[in-house]
Length: 265
Ligand code: NDP
Image 1 (cartoon, rainbow, N blue to C red):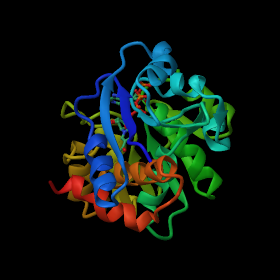
Image 2: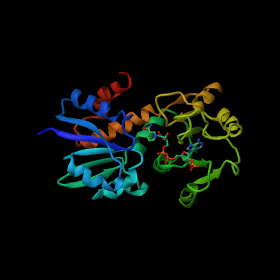
Image 3: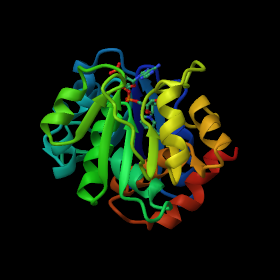
């Protein structure tokens, strides 16, 4: 087999851990491939760039997941349902699109048992795909967002939704920060008076941001709650993408054994 080329497309893309994760797994499993990064400025050019670079597959990060959806010839049913693609594989000249963020997230939270009700703080693209998979799995998801606009489509799909002003606090088993609050600043994803009601009642709290302890996770810990950041979500979405890249030749745990090293190097 000649060497296969993979990449992550995004803007920005320099911070991405995906090249390290995938290259560790390719070399560990002795799979003849390498994985780079590509700063894609114009999402409309995703498809032509993919072919021009001679790639076998890509991951797509912010802000191009919807362009990636449009660029595919075939869509996995879940990716089609949520309208966002973060993994593309070329097979016989056609592009096949998948969403691995949501199953990665689902696996990451599966360690928290006896969870039925979930409060999402945030209503962006990540909340869209992960809320859909949680609902398919039987969780009851409520979406709380600082502004009204993004809530409309969630409400249309039957989710319970609220803005901070209209929120009537009640207990939730799991509270999850789905926003970018705390990523590059010290802000909380919701007003403190709301968090001071919901966090003490939660069984656990999760943040999708990884690699740092956000103010949200700090506050959750101050109530003695089990917490988890977004590292496992990132790792698991990468493993599931790798399964597609390599046509399911390796088991999840075989890939994990190598890919997880990206978080300790
Ligand atoms: P989007 O830009 O699509 O959505 C952002 C959401 O955050 C909106 O609901 C927005 O509210 C809200 N928000 C932003 N800043 C604040 C703030 N200061 N206070 C309250 N709400 C705020 O983002 P994504 O869904 O693409 O990404 C969300 C997070 O998920 C990011 O931090 C990203 O890094 C992380 N992520 C992690 C992954 C992982 O593997 N661990 C994978 C993918 C994403 P409004 O509608 O009012 O603007």
